[in-house]
Every structure is written in structure tokens, then in C-alpha cells.
Length: 140
Image (cartoon, rainbow, N blue to C red; front, side, top):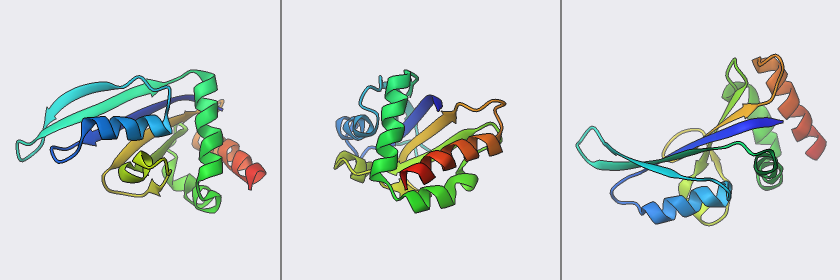
């Protein structure tokens, strides 16, 4: 169902790289995380943590956990809005909640960003939406 999951989180100067790394691993336990330094608009140091998870067993575990730990009605209602034309599903998780092993999906703000590539052929929005919606409705 999922080809891969790309993730990214920004770690600001008042945050701990170790804590944000742990938050990412609470969502994607098998993630291999790369760190890159960047500079913010006010010349503050930012660390960008990112990577890709593509092994089927890990993407499947992520999706099953997502369906167990999140509000399925909200997930379903937001599906069209958070899926692009190529079948990429964009999700944001609250960093503080992820550190506490809770999966809270956000619409904006400072978060762990996921780009979930849905396995749909052809790779079109409606096909991807239908596949995910079917899985949500089966679980609900």
C-alpha cells in the first residue's frame, strides 16, 4: 500500500536533537536519520533531521499503527486535502506528543513532516485516496 515514507523535522536552538530524534523513532522505529545544519532567517542554527523508510514491513507497520492510534474519522475527512495529484499523502505529527509516544496529527505548525507515497497505479490522487479510504473504512 505504501511505496515509501519520507520524513523531516526541524530542530531549533531551544530544542534537543536527541529528543526530536526519539520522537521520530516513536513514529518510524526503523528510520535511519540524517542530520543537516542550516541557518534560519534570523541567523539561528537549525538542524534538519530527515530520511526515507521504504522497506515494506516497516511501511506496513507504520500504516497499521496509524490506523490504530489516530482519529479515523478525521483522517478520512482530511484525506482529499492532504493528498497531492501524484498520490503523496502529507501528514504532520506533533513533536512533543510523538516524544510521549502519542500520534497527534496537526494541520500546521512545528511538526514532524511525513510524505507518504501511496502505491497506486496509475499514480493519481483519486486512486490513492480510494485505497487509503478503503483501509480506513475497513478499520473503522
